[in-house]
Image 1: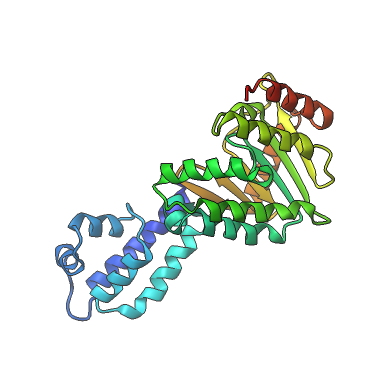
Image 2: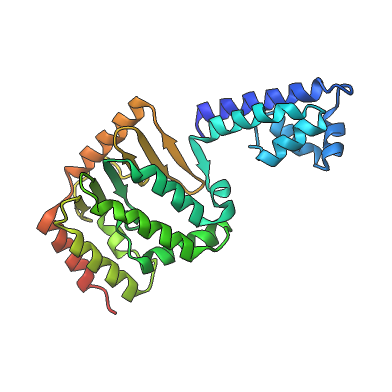
Length: 282
């Protein structure tokens, strides 16, 4: 967890403590507040000391229990301010993957270019519907999230319309291991590779493959997507990191450019994909 994020969470905790101490009906102890809320005292302690991130419901209940309901708006604004950069999957997937895909559709609609590194699965911008279905189903199980697979797939397919709009450019790097990864049945993976073979040569796509034996000048790190020069979204198991400061954006672009020096493009990329495709027994 980033230092800035933790600092902001601790600041929110101090504000919660102030509300408890300044309760109009008289100062409350942590035990007394916990009893009012029907919580374990340990939860009150963790929230006040910045060791747990509250939900909107937690903040509303806290404000009401300390007889300061009007403070909820301020508390919620503080929470959204520091959560905007670390978007936990637990929170994002509370209503399933569909809403997350719609957020991404809005996020990318006005972007002119993307620079992406995919080293876990085929980029969502190029996934077939069947491949995407398995990705969403696996992730929902892992995250204990609601199953809304069909809604999520429709949202992802809708976003791919971006590729067919003039003036757009997807600059994508994928490690060859992604092409081999059996996260779906062989016939689904084969169809996905056929899709990638057809993408090479599209005016709006520049796709590079990092062969297994490529000499890399830096470690791969996490998958990420950069929208224009304004935002980088990094994928992790617990959250997406939304990074928008200039120095960080420059760094991620440097990472992409460095890895691109080890990638193969065009017909050479097609040859790598075709070789993997031949190795799949359907």
